[in-house]
Amino acid sequence: MQKLKISILFIIIFFSIILIKNTSFAAEIDVVGNTVTAKPGDTVKVQFITMGVTSNNKLGALEAKLGQTDSRLTQIGTLTTNIGVSGDVISYFATDEKSAPSDDVVINAEFKIPNSMPKGEIVVPLSVDVLMDMDAKDYAKTANAIINIEGGNSIVPITISGKSTDATLKSLSITPAILTPSFSSNVLSYNTTVGTSVNKVDVVAVSNNSKATCKILGNMNLEEGTNVIRVVVTAESGNEKIYKIIILKKAAEIDTNTIIPNIQRLSTAANSSVITGEQVTEGNLHGELLNTANEIHSSSQQIKSSTLKWIIIILICVIIIIIISIYLRIKHHY
Image 1: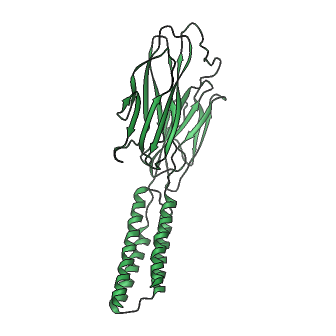
Image 2: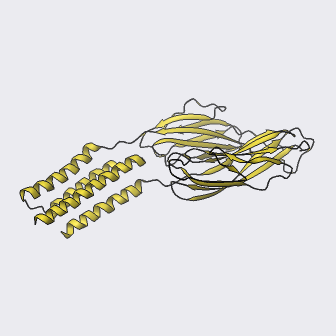
């Protein structure tokens, strides 16, 4: 009977390792500010986008506040967001998973440009603390929005003169997939579909200006369903433009044709032996457990979806219940 207990423990440990191995906790979180152009006397709105929030990686909590901004600007109102929270300091906490944001969080700030404002570039800083529901990890991020002032009579000291503001792409491609629609530098959003076995994609982005830089976010650890890849292009002057690729990853399928029969065979074999009085050997039972474990392990290797993982967990629980039932029957019979 000692071997039977060891077998039960082995099964539990075996599947715990499988589930931990197949679960992805990585999150890619970034915050970027936009670039706007204004003239003296204008009212202008800047935006900060917290990227990396998805249906598989929901927002748990967020706190954001502006840093020290040019004293010549007059802030109008307070910070606002697309998640229904506003204030001088944005403070948000998800009360439950259902209500937690599952898409980019946008933070807005509005300013009045004085009529005497000279030509140049003004930096608006924002500091953000993000807690992701998926991995319960805190991310401290900072981002700058840029206000380019045109039409003034002089240049302020922070002006970046002579630097390119071109933040567009010359080309954009993804492997293994095809973008829809076909790439155009003026089109900022694309769609594509990948198979269930694809966990990452290679994105090649080439900027129009050689001094612009490209940053790719979200192309790793793809989850079943909708995934969003962002290509952030930063011009030499600091101007930014974001290209978005929306990837639909197909759902994996569980091969119940191999899993269910093994569970049924395990239960039937043990029950028949107990009913007929046939001796159930620990070696035979241990062999049946290993066969069932191997079949489920083979099917679960391709499983990445949270929903499908719960199905696997339920199947494991069924096996454990059957094992306990067999143990009690054998103990009672003998």
